[in-house]
Image (cartoon, rainbow, N blue to C red; front, side, top):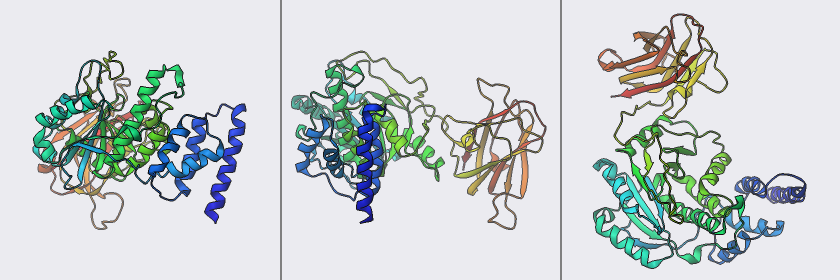
Length: 477
């Protein structure tokens, strides 16, 4: 009964907001977003029924009165359930077990050029045998042209038959009858009708692809069908995820372009699929993703550098127009990614704004920034579990502020003596001094006779300059 009154009260608020809409700048999409938050809290799980597809088509092309969109959200805003779509399996072997990572690609017929086969090839060729055991690739052939689909399935099965047999590659299609109306849509941003249709259909394509992949793995990464991969990208992704253990995130970005290299927890895929489907005609998918991330309270972009995926297509899938975008942070060859095991970070330095200590330890493009440190100030990392360190690298300063380095300091490692549940270490040894703001040492495990509980940056002389700790990298053995 309480839940009913809560929902009724929400509807009354929304009706008032609709009345005020004529006199305010609040967008209709903003109202929907607020409403989604309430519905996600109060509406119980239910599946989208086959008979409701017509409702989707009717409501998606009109401004909704309050009674109609209330009913629509009761049906569509079940973010924990999957969308009821019967997929066609064009080339697939039943998945024997859940994998670590699913890689999703949606592809349509292009007027110029075709890169899908090269993208699939890059995924498999840039992965080791051990990595291949942990990935599955799902390709949604989203074009309604059956002749093109047949041709692509023929080429894919000829070239990647062993991956299909091994369950690493699945090719699927979502029939056209499951799509909402794609004509006569709202022309937001003064886009021409064909552009609106293209980006709106693309949103639905991605929604159906995400929906299919919801239970195939622990994590999911979205690629486009014209992408080149960095070598051993899966190993890098696993290290980044491990380094973020215990922190909250919705989306990790491994490319700064479009919908390339965006990684999610698989348990968020049903919600994201519903979100894309409900707002499919409002804006391009990469804009919707920003709203989705914000709704789930990840305020800032978490982007890893260097990028693991590069856009390689020259001709866009929209009208074959030229698309020369490249990610200048991409590195194809393997690079030495640190392990950075889970840890808590503490400092008694005066932190500037939100450049807090944890940002120096992150594998993404962030850093710690503090006001001028004094002698005996410390920056301490306390590891969740004792570790054996193979290599340490600490970098201070930045390209823009090259003098904001640690001018005088040492790097110490420590252990907890006696009481093990205490927060910090009570015994340290010094490994060496910072030189020109940097510290690097290999074979640490041969120099330290114990498992390391803590690592400490110790300021040995007061300085006038502020301090940026750009990165702390730790490799374990």
